[in-house]
Image (cartoon, rainbow, N blue to C red; front, side, top):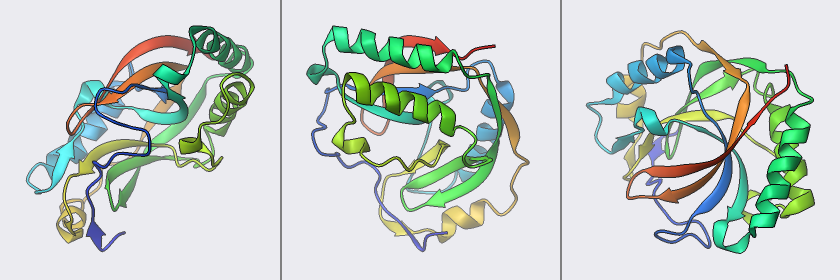
Length: 204
């Protein structure tokens, strides 16, 4: 657990207001247990200053950064999507457990168990990206901590109020991953919004 929180809302290199980034997300669509778990954590955090709670419609698990939309052609997007589709078709749906609390300096998130359970999905995306658009500098490391963010920190300050609010923790719930989504995402104030560009299903 961190001793202090810091402001999450800073611009990564190349990012600016209105500039869209292409990413692959895993989304908890059709899994009300996940939304309920997030809601229960957010109810505990509602009175804590310095946090932006993630609205239910924008809950997500960022899985692979692709790059900035204005630097990627339509043909590359098609090739990328086809590459991911072909690889995910060879994978059976994966079920993990979501709810492992992770308080980090820029927010509160729920991790998964087993921690490497979703690596095959991530590897499919990275391989397809490397073959079609290249691995973007913002995502140059293969390491990945899969998580669904519950809240982002918007200020610098002590972490104790956040940690104290989470003294009682709900039990984790299953998350069944049957698809991945290519999105065009933009930062909008203290919020991430996106347009869904493609849905790619796993096999089975």
